[in-house]
Figure (cartoon, rainbow, N blue to C red):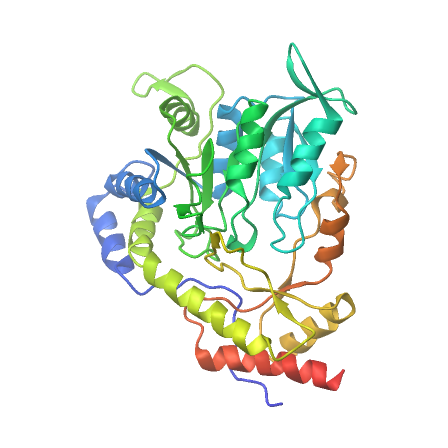
Length: 386
């Protein structure tokens, strides 16, 4: 097969709106740092879009997670339930607090945190005493649950929040990959105590970096904003009342974000259309499945991800790369990383089974039908030759 001249990238920004205009306006105003009208506008528009009362812009998604954990009361020595199948950022954010991750298994269809396994862990591995919910194995206290909407597909949030409420645990929603995705008609980021977004360059909209915390709880929003500005209680008197962080988004980045957000609905429409074309074409290849979408979910298909036979994953990736198609495997499972291998894990059998089958394929907004057909043709050719 003749290789296409141009690389088909995995996921790159689509900058086709008011980006240049808003950036010029920002530069002309002189307000380029962490204060400015575009920061205010971006916070307001993201919170309105998601459906929450408050939005707090941050320098990146990891900072959003860190601040949310702190504001929800996670302290050194505490534990937070998190999936092992995730990007490393939420787990690192737990560690930033001096706390410990407890890795609970995912289910194989959507690769998201398995709510039933969370319930089993809390019922069978924990006890409640006068200080809270205690992990019987470690003797530490569970202080939060941190689900991740993997590849843009929502976790079963109503079931998870019901369990968390039973144990009075806050739920910190890692919606970094899922802006625009819906769970039973509600946007991710508005389904729990707080939601956290990322606007990294490979996300559905980008500020070049950037993050956002969304919440309906005013005290939490106020505390998160306070922490993000070095905990400066009197800005012009340099009075700081607790350890804070330099985590605010710049006005320049927010200008880019406002322009990108104006195009989000069209981005979502294109990505869902592309995912459906992938699904139709891949149906002719019995060895390959596109990751499942539950009937109660509306994924943004941030990254279209395939499940293939484990023995074929590496050679198929190598073949696609040789055809100038950018692909990637799933993240290394968190409990296998050296800094987390001693952390407690619970029922990871499905997680470990599905991990070796995943390949993410080109998913950019500007992906063309011709490119999608070429990607699928290359996958078909690989299996025909195997």
